[in-house]
Amino acid sequence: MKKYRGVIFDLDGTLLDTIDDISDSMNDVLKQYSHPTFTSEEYKLKIGGGFKNLALNSFPKGTLEKIINESIELFANMYDKRYMNKSKPYEGIDELLDILVDKDIKLGVNSNKRNDYTNNLVNNFFQKIPFVAVYGECKDIPTKPDPTLVLKITKAMDLKPEEILYVGDTNTDMMTAGNAGIDSVGVLWGFRSYEELNKYGAKYIISNPKELLDII
Image 1 (cartoon, helix red, strand yellow):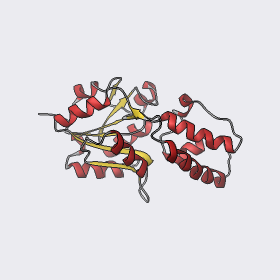
Image 2 (cartoon, rainbow, N blue to C red; image 1 turned 135 degrees about the vertical axis):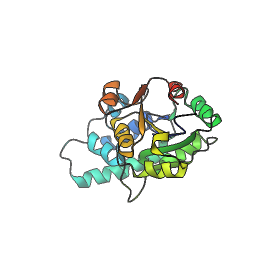
Image 3 (cartoon, rainbow, N blue to C red; image 1 turned 45 degrees about the vertical axis):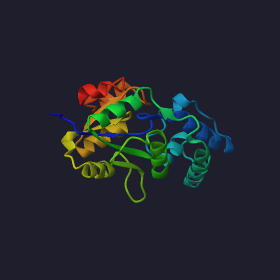
Image 4 (cartoon, rainbow, N blue to C red; image 1 turned 90 degrees about the horizontal axis):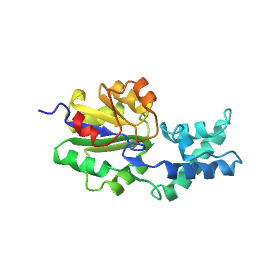
């Protein structure tokens, strides 16, 4: 009998490598304000809490809230035009999802990316995968590490928290899993380090998608 019957995935840095489209879009915004730009590697430490956190982490400290709010709107306009230009599934993800479906594992996605982008990306890259539920950032619902949406997916799966794994690549994901009472899997192919994932309580840490099958 399987210990785990469901898996909830983060999106950016876990299922999809989206960093270049995010970097290109935010750098275009920063240039409009004559601020320094950053590399894709540097942006890996700036994302993970939605568009507002990305803006706050990219603009100089002390930037007026009015400017931050303007920049979020500008970023959304830039990102809307290119968010599928360079983004792609990580190597081994497609095969992993197919195997999980064959094993009757229930699947979901919970991201801090805006809900429409999250669903569009999932529908574009994983259209054959029967996810039980896919949620990005939703109005009037707190973002991760708040567990509200994870618990909503858990209910939709009709499973207990102890029957589910939460898979992600950042401290936010590990905290989200903990807040929901779900075992966490940190992935090393994403945006953050082993040290961060371990520090924030990852129950498992894997470096290859196929290793998730050993856990299940």
